[in-house]
Image (cartoon, rainbow, N blue to C red; front, side):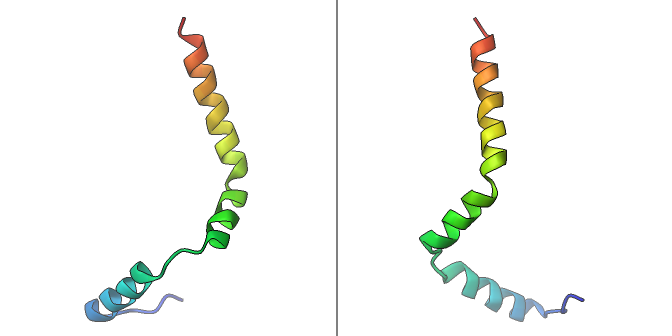
Length: 53
């Protein structure tokens, strides 16, 4: 179950996350998980661009 935060706690937690630098490893993991979606979107864009002659 999700914890309830006061507004001050929520802002404090958000600021902590905001200032945390994203690691290249984390970005790589994210891209690996989304690789299939990026492939499909790329194919769709290619089809759209090539179909307009």
